[in-house]
Length: 325
Image 1 (tube, rainbow, N blue to C red):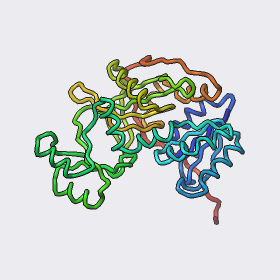
Image 2 (image 1 turned 30 degrees about the vertical axis):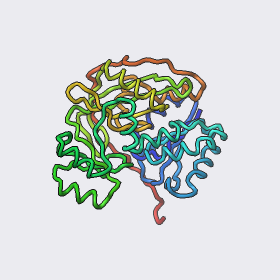
Image 3 (image 1 turned 90 degrees about the vertical axis):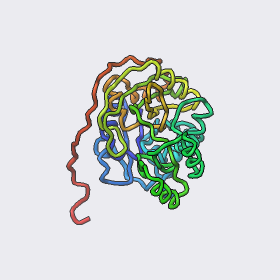
Image 4 (image 1 turned 120 degrees about the vertical axis):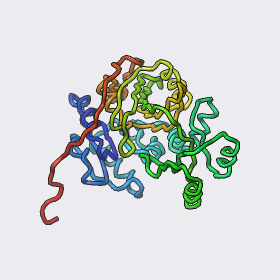
């Protein structure tokens, strides 16, 4: 039973977790376009591949799948999710299970305006979001919005291009330079990260893990603490079922005065999933079970509260190139 993790980058600990689960009867193979990606040197085997936007990328991944007899494939970066989902049928003809949601679902998650419309249509609380400055200004004049606001790309990831703005002049300048930037209500409350696993066979929710984010770094959760919240579990169950995602999902939620607002949705492993694994929410095992044709049983909220995750620096020292190359 072999799994391929693409665009592995810096996610060394996650690769270690997969190795723990696959070590007895399979290998964890990883890819990246950069030979200095640390996760390459944690896996059982690695390949350097073209960038995901190059025309021969998918063909190179297919060759690896055939050579390594890959059973399942997943990506760790947002831009590749749609690509793999789009080519899902081609991979499954090779006997490779693509561990990602359907293409239209992935696109909805990746497009912040589409996600906002989905949330509003399905009666979930979320931050007010505007495509047009004029609509925001109208609500501001009516007292329905206030500064500061977030300005962010419609299709961004890893918190790139996000700015907190409390000045109309700066807001106008940013929008004039990029009309696709969205204006989003600033939610002043506790931020939670929710890790969810939806079984690939039954399509039922197997696990929900909640953590309160204490500190962020470069768009990822750096410090967090586990918590159990029955009210939030129910909201997430309802949301995930209506959205139709499968596999691992990462959801950002804000608690504002006791009300839960769904913010970002990433249909992949989130950077803060590590705490969920350490608390017993074993998504790599769930994936392995599914690849073996085994349905996972639902088990929500069966983990300890007040367990802290504190990320810290480590390093890999390795000669990457032969002398003279």
